[in-house]
Length: 83
Image (cartoon, rainbow, N blue to C red; front, top):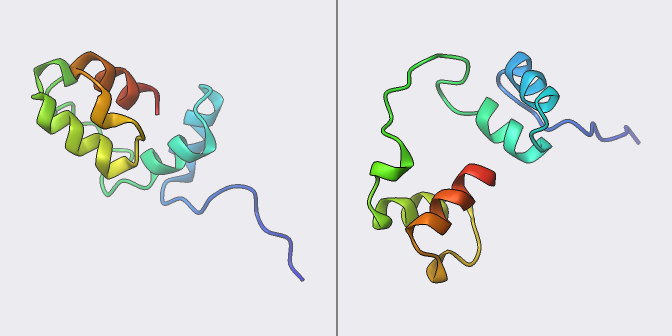
């Protein structure tokens, strides 16, 4: 039986490894490296502080942050940045 690879399948392995070297978890590094525009620079998204609480909540729900219904805007921002 083949041994499972401990590294998740990623679209952009170079970016994944760079994120792991920076201390990101395997899950977070894989999620970032698997985004459709992984490896491209953009910076077009507004900072979380400019998002509404509802927008932050939907993003948190999309990536599976638990306890989000009890979080205020600052808690949601912190959770999104550190998930």
